[in-house]
Image (tube, rainbow, N blue to C red; front, top):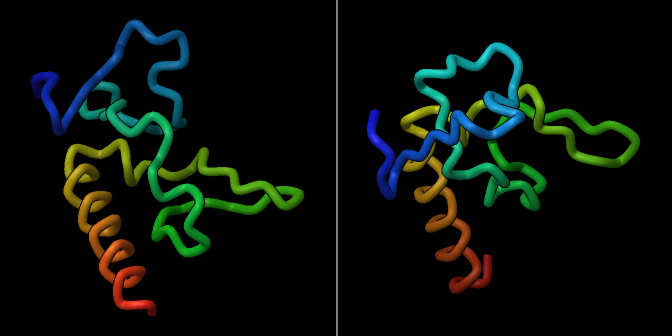
Length: 85
């Protein structure tokens, strides 16, 4: 997959790939910091450790299809906020 607005791989990063079990050839670094991190129910595989959200097991934003899923969720959140729900 080529680097583009939907997918970016930084194989030169010293942490690449930063999640155990991730397939390096399909690992998307675009959302290195997940835009959904601050949502209580982000839809990803996270765990709480001493009150801190640990997203180490989550690959949702790093899969090739993650771009569409993240943007869809951000749109949902924006719509809900505008509608006051």
